[in-house]
Length: 341
Image (cartoon, rainbow, N blue to C red; front, side, top):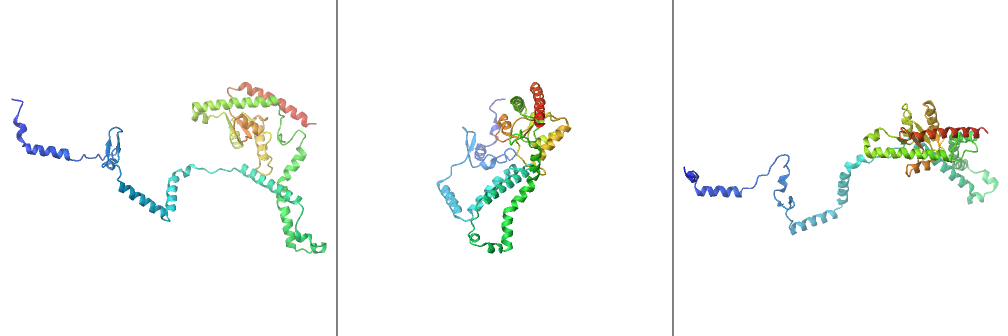
């Protein structure tokens, strides 16, 4: 059988040409699967083989002018600003849950209220020291001043003594305790709740221990952050220290600042420090008063003042820890000797 078979000539040449014309002129069907579901949007676009990305057809000059005119008309409308704010709110709505409000604890609230009372008392003292310049009272005689209405007398007395009574009620416990417990060695930088004296050697050992543990903790965070968060070396702040003190054999050493702000009253800072000392004595946890708040912040290279540091793991700095305990015993003996006089 010859290679040039007549089977191909069964269809006429005219029908064969027509079939080829239909295939060439037929538009390519777009795939509608999940992967290519948005391909129909680019049906009227060209394809850039260099960038391998569909490039849209350039807009005509008339179409650009129409869009500019529409935008100009929208800006002139009075509701344009309202629409703009609604669109911006919709954009920010997804990020609203990420913004968290500042949580004010009960201790911080009591400290702020006490500060406000002190400021009000200082302001009232400054105003009472100034001479009275009320002209209507200066021109009155002694008999006329006695016959003033009771309402004006009550108002003048209330203005001078309202804040003073509140402050005296709050400061009553502090004045009695400081009068009884106050000693010549105590001051604003070394308050009466401290149980041990501070020395240069004690400060040096404490800073060395804190710097070493902070370096170990940062190294662990760089290696594996999840594991480091689960097993921290130390924690900062009263809230973290109290929560870890409630766990048995969790805190190995507690370092408190010597110059914490005075805040008497219920749920105040003085009561919190006394509770921490009592819980440390119950759980046999050593506590130390060696550095001030600003010095603790310098050791950790932080701007905010630090009042309390709880050490949870001192592996790698055992020698420094033992030296600190020995120096702490000597400092307590010195404190007892000085306060016994």
